[in-house]
Every structure is written in structure tokens, then in C-alpha cells.
Length: 245
Image (tube, rainbow, N blue to C red):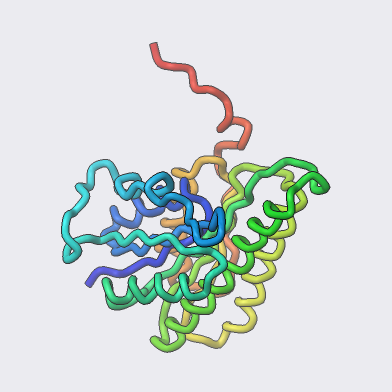
């Protein structure tokens, strides 16, 4: 029987690469990117944000029909506990269970001085990094504890940024402390909980490391941070590539 992964977070490039890795490993995947509301009652245009074909490996055909479809793509409105709950219920309806969860957070990289950040930007970053993660975590922990099993992995994807802007440093610090606290409060439960921090600027490299670490290490350990420095720095990633020939 196929395992089911619930994959959520605010980094679409990494989510797409992780989706390809896990589909290659024959998982069912519920992909729930965190989105925001631009205006009251108006979602970001989903067609502009999400193209399902981008989440598939190039050599894996996109299957038509719900029965054989290994991927369910549903964006979550980050400040809505009802959106989180409904997304998870829809995933359970499709695949019956959730075996593993990956919760990703990546800094925004907004380099404007703190005193110049609009209040709306601060609110958006805080909502995504704190509220969204709490609502998701509450639901998945409830499922895992009721089933008495599960693998929960937190991923802090730093994208090669060595010095974080103040707002990002605050949220990333909160994320780390949240994970450490979860380690302490759930250490006696029969679920595996670990953290991964990747500094690589390359989402493909990071996705391969995360997938390998979860499958080979995190499934049998509890309360550990696995750290990946990566081969590619943020500045290297920004350099234009010289065309061949």
C-alpha cells in the first residue's frame, strides 16, 4: 500500500522539487502551499500560482481521473483554521490516511530596512510563518496521535542567505524554537519528529537531501536537527549561466 505525504509550506520551488522526489518514490502526495488573501474575499488567482504539471517528474505522466491520481493539490489560506482543516479532510477522503508530514518554512528575503516595511508586509510574513504553521501543526498532530504513529519533519529552507533581514530572523528563530519545544512536549509519543535545516540555494539539491534524510534517518530517530550546508551559495545561484557552445 502506498504511503501518503502531506506537504505544505511557503516555498513553491522547494515544494515542487520535493513533490517530484516523492512521486518518484511512489508516494501519494497532498500538496498544500500556503497562500494569502490579497483583498477581503479575493484569493490570489490559483491558475497563476499553481500549475499541477510543475509538481511532476518529467518522466512521469500526469494521470487522469481521481482513482489513479497520486497527487492532490489544494492551496491553504494561511490565516484560516477552517481552510487547514478542510484541506486535510479532503486529503483523507482521497487517500484515507496521512503517514508523513513535511512542514516547510523559508525566509522571504525582503531586504528593505525594518522601519520601511509596510505593516501589511509584516502582517503577511508573521501570519505565514507563525499562524499558518500552528494551524497545520495542530491538525496533523491530532491525526498522528489518534493513529499512534506518523513521521513529522520540519524543514527550514534558508536558500543560501547567510545574514537574514530582521523580520526573517525573527520568524526563523520562532520556527526553530517551535520545533525544539515540540521535541520536548511530544518526546513520549509514538511518532517520529525531527528538523532539517538546509542552507543550499538550490531547491533540487535541497529536495534530494531532505528526501534521503527522511527515508534513511528521520524515520527511526526523534528530536534531531539535520543540517545541510549545500554546495551552492545564494550568490552563486544569482550568477547568470553561460550558454553552451
